[in-house]
Image 1 (cartoon, helix red, strand yellow):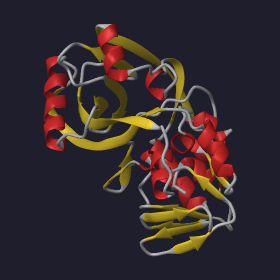
Image 2 (cartoon, rainbow, N blue to C red):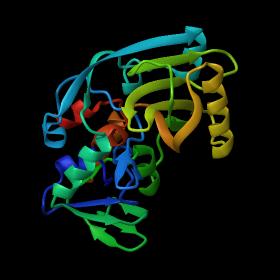
Image 3 (cartoon, helix red, strand yellow):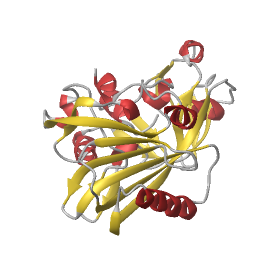
Image 4 (cartoon, rainbow, N blue to C red):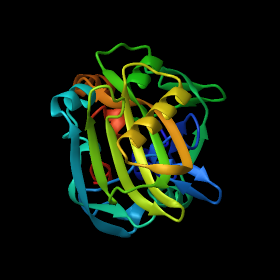
Length: 286
């Protein structure tokens, strides 16, 4: 379950991938005319995922800068040392946008895909019910958010999460490429700003706002832009803006016992969301 990188690496010709909609994975990106734009900045710690990136990787030097208090930053962002947010130093990025590579990988795959919202997962009967389908399974690999999967299966858990609002802007900036700024200033909503790569119309900047609850999109976009200008990170005009609400931004709680329980029903957990653990793209491709 889940049209994720993990699912599509594991799935064979005779398997079925089920998800809500085709662009459900963050790696799918946003469609911009004939091309796409990545929803999040991707950094790899080593040369990996040959099936997806075909070895087309570029080595870069990523700098990390803390603006303000580290104590305030930890209160806002938590421990990010074991997630992609905290990666810095000598890293790799794909030569093209990750969404280009990912979509091409999906096109090459012969796996059948069904897109329909899940209504119920019956573990005893080994049946998945969606709005349009009823599917029986012999073995189920879940890469959807585990918290969501358990809800649909009628199970409770101690798993929790925090959310974030992520804004991508193509703008003029004084910031160096591939620099991460962790914002520890009091009164700022921004937690992380990533100066990523050049586009034909300007540099793409990613702004992360950790949330305790969902807020109005327009309010957060305006606030983020104001704070980015206040920090002198961006200049007018904003040439392109895209944003999304990441419900399962930081994962909390341990899923090992849940995973052992689900194995009794031939359900296996995989991927970052599915296994509820901070694993990287390189971990997924192993």
